[in-house]
Structures are given as C-alpha cells and as structure tokens.
Amino acid sequence: MLKPTAAQETTTRKITRNMSMSLRKKVATTVGAVALAFAGVLGSAGQSFAGSNGQQIHFHDNSSVVYSIRIQGYNQNGDAASGCFPTPTKDTWIGGWWWKGEANVTFYKNNSCSFATYYGETTVWVPNSQSGDWTSVYS
Image (cartoon, rainbow, N blue to C red; front, side, top):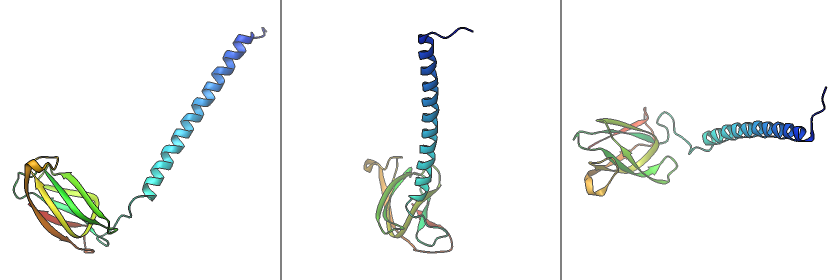
C-alpha cells in the first residue's frame, strides 16, 4: 500500500477539520435556535388566560370603510401600550395583545393608521376580568 504524500495528508486533515467545524456549527445553530425559542416562551410578557387579567380586542366594522385601527391604553401589566392593526374584514380579532381599563380606539380608512385617512374614534372600557377573553369595539 502506498503512503500518502504530505500534501494529501494536509488535504485530508483540512477536509476532516472542515466537516467537524461544519457539524459543530450546525449543532450550535440548532442549540441556539432552541434556546431562543424557549427563552421567547419564558420571557413573554405574562399572558392572561380566560379573561382573568385583561382582554383582547374584537373589532367589528359597522361602517365597512375602516381598514386599520390604533389602540392606545394599558396592557395586562399596567404598562402603556399602543398598536396599529389592519382590519381586513368586518370582524377582526386582535389576539396576543391584552388590554385593561380605558382604551382609545382610532379608526382609519387605510391599512397603516395614517392620520390623513382618519375616520373617527371611540373609547372602550376593557374589564379586568370576565367570562371570555374578548371585548368588542364597534366603528
């Protein structure tokens, strides 16, 4: 059997090292992704369940001209919160945002909450707790 040359041995070592580094990178990337996903679940802003610490908003467009709404109020932790939400259908459930207390809802005739398309607004009282998770707002 022939002995490999120094160049062949060097090439073999580089390939082995690159394969090993590639495998380490894949493992590290996978572990990192799992850790981020797990941290995202643990670090989420204390969600409410079953209407026990704030409610989510259900928007019903009576006018059929509202394409976005801005909600300003307080979240389940008592922190000021504001968000612009598209309302592509007559009924839109804005999940994942929990509100409580007084909230101001502004209606817009486009999907980006642009003041140039202001349509109107209303104030809604969002109860701290109720039997369900949704408080309805009407245009």
